[in-house]
Length: 197
Image (cartoon, rainbow, N blue to C red; front, side, top):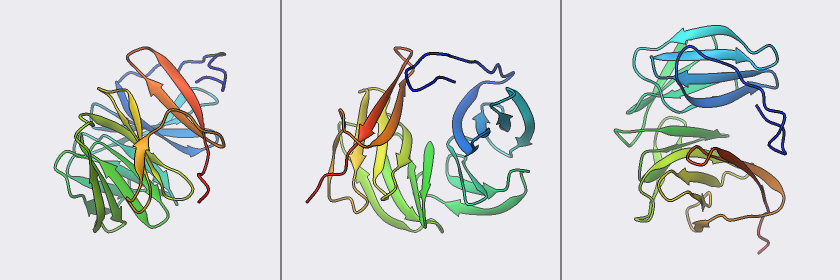
């Protein structure tokens, strides 16, 4: 954990390798791990408060409206923070990686495509561009626009909520986007500014 200046680092050691992380509240995060496990972690105390065993390996994870959405390659499991299963959402890819939820919309990615779906898994649109080869992280802003990182090209891609605009993000000024680059061991904080028509 770092402050916005990238200093004052604090570490929480885990016994298993973490993959993806989501904020639950100001004190709590949920982390998907390699060994079919989700850890619920109190970041104030640095302790694992509970763990959830999953039936298959989990990848992307997001917490929204008291639901934990967990990608397990070809579908999304919906559960509460105790691991109580609620439902399964099909996704239009056999290799799902990460996920974001915005209102009644689900955004998931595989290595090369972005899928914008309703919460029942119905595909609204798909975005693919040959320049993107290894998509890894996805998030949405307060207007449903999508931001995706590509591990091989070190690009952050922006796609509008109706898929009529897209581009690479270099900088901006208003809302904040945090991008971590594991290859160089640094994180970058961007402000995102809405373009006026």
